Image (tube, rainbow over all chains, first blue to last red):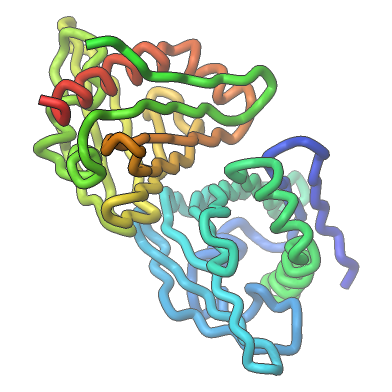
Length: 158
Length: 158
């Protein structure tokens, strides 16, 4: 399966735009974003480590906490709260990489139906500063997102 | 009492920075930001209308909803969720003006002690786009913030 994810990191801006079209219905993609049993099958699947979803409640005010452990046992923790969860079209949540406290992003993901019956996923993440955004990119954000969405595609398109 | 609030809206950026020094302790200012009975005494006090705090729970995952009614009965609703609440130094929350759905900001407020025993308040709000930020400014955001922080100063400095 080809990696068709597009990631836009424009110099000098405070945001990152990620998009990909999935050959699956909006309902299927929305479920993969909001059902922790499905999230566990694709999120942060950048390396050979394991993912523990310590918290995950996809509703306004619900929290989530993802603990990634690599093969050395090192932990990479991402956490946040949901601002808005509107089936099957919209998920808005905060995201903090706990190793970089204060670099909190607000991520708005939308799902649109395509003419061919697929689903266009678009996510906009806004950071407190250009420097905070660039630090997350330098920490390997793009590679993690690409690997995760590739897994997500395998999950919903199978 | 002089209005000493500084508001920075730099052209082409996605954020707004608001700062003010209060002649009060961090604990007092923090309480004014997180106790709904105190918030009701200063928030959004830009006009002659009334404020109803329909929801307000200052903890990670807690929600808030402020309904401002002007003298004609028109409602202006602001709502969001708390990402982080760390006494007495930090409050991070989302904020959506419901009349402009999707223009969601992530607002990080910090409180620092000053040498003279006062408290420096600094708030950074990040918007999904420059246009979304400019729309909020055009809707009168600065006037509302100034009036609110002036009321907050009267509350904590009295």
